[in-house]
Length: 64
Image 1 (cartoon, rainbow, N blue to C red):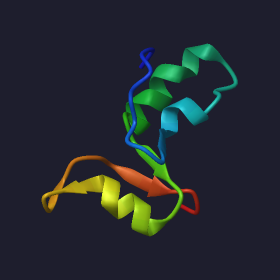
Image 2: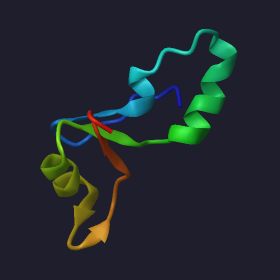
Image 3: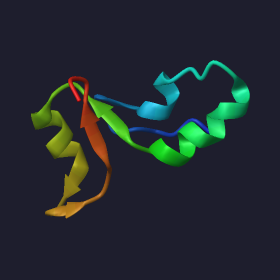
């Protein structure tokens, strides 16, 4: 949770974009989001999410 991760190019970790109102809530947010990545669009998300046809990352788009 505390460590920054090297996200694939063109993505960011969703957890790093969220600012809980109180620090004590950060573990709950991390538990729900884990290392989910945010990509600009669906095409980018699909490219990042799969390698060799197998899911590697959980990815959402900026539009949800």
